[in-house]
Image (cartoon, helix red, strand yellow):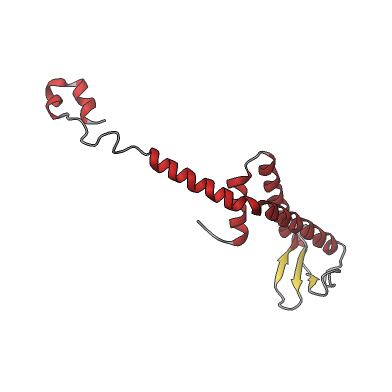
Length: 155
């Protein structure tokens, strides 16, 4: 509640204190700011739109590569080198509790990778891009959002 509201209810007590706002409507108009913001967003869209096909192709390649790697690892015995990785990955020996997960170790560094997670993440990134593209939301939603996640940049 404010004084103007109180003045409407108790005219004798509050009316002397009510005055119009000294700032005119023209001074607080945000139309110019909105137009500039929209122009900046549209310019970003025009700059990033040519990259959309590259992003889509990259997501599809990443999805296919992760699915192929996971399939190759599933048919490899734990402790053996995973085929088609040029000896770079070995299927890790994982505890039985994690039987539904496929792990691999990089032979050069010993770093462990959860291939099931990599494949799932690649699939859902690709699916999100395709759904948004199909709905016509590609300009800001895909190019501005998903690509930032892959590059690690933040706003």
